[in-house]
Length: 332
Image 1 (cartoon, rainbow, N blue to C red):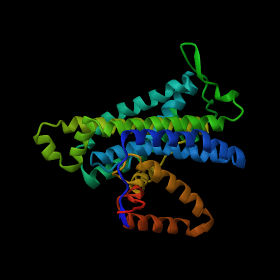
Image 2: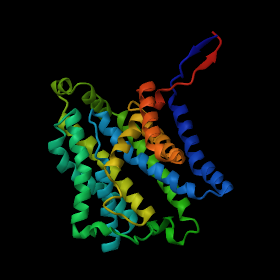
Image 3: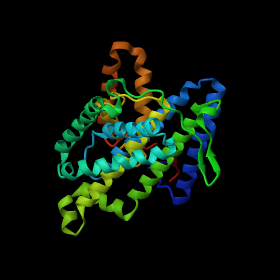
Image 4: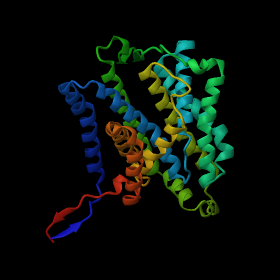
């Protein structure tokens, strides 16, 4: 008998695994929640899915060798853009979703042009400050309603394309929580399908070269400035879309809806899941979110135990949870 590592999955096996995962998330999980009567889990799992989307953007900036601790800023911007368009201008939520992401892309280009030249801890420090700057702007600007925030934001209306209703008006649904959950899972699936395709494309391979050696990549003709900006813009787009979806669920937004703590958590989701794996942020988000809630019963020791476990996990599994391989036994 001998022990071997987990074999690499073929394209067919990857498609089968993806289809099975979606079937579990879209069919089995709702059935299990309905059977248990724990409808509150819909909000929890929807939050995990949306936090995974924003964390996926952070993972992409790690992929180009930048430590991003500012995703909370773009989530807050995206949330406010969506809320303002819906409340003040009557725009459909489904239209505000991409618009919020695109606004974050425009903001990231303006911000990214100067700061993406920085590296390591210097870039991390600037992005960390960015979240607080956006929060203070939300407090000061009249259009965001200051500290009182924006409340009574309407639920998403029907999504109709060429006269065909793809999604009903959420306000008319008996269980809008289920609709939000399904929408969040589909959004997460689209996000990570796009990320997977990106990193396995020519652009993705060029981005990896930035992570390894920017000077060498530049010397062979790679436009490193453009690649950094593209990756940062995509990252910000995902943060904005995730923030906009959170606004629709909570039907409110405040300057404190996304803080520096959230930006740090987005980064930790990537570390815990594994920076070397596209789907790492999903696993990291799930474990951190439920881990924090599970430790709530420990009271005043919650943060101490939580932090200690995180440090232990990163020491034992420095490449993340997905680096843990279950052994398979076979005759040899």
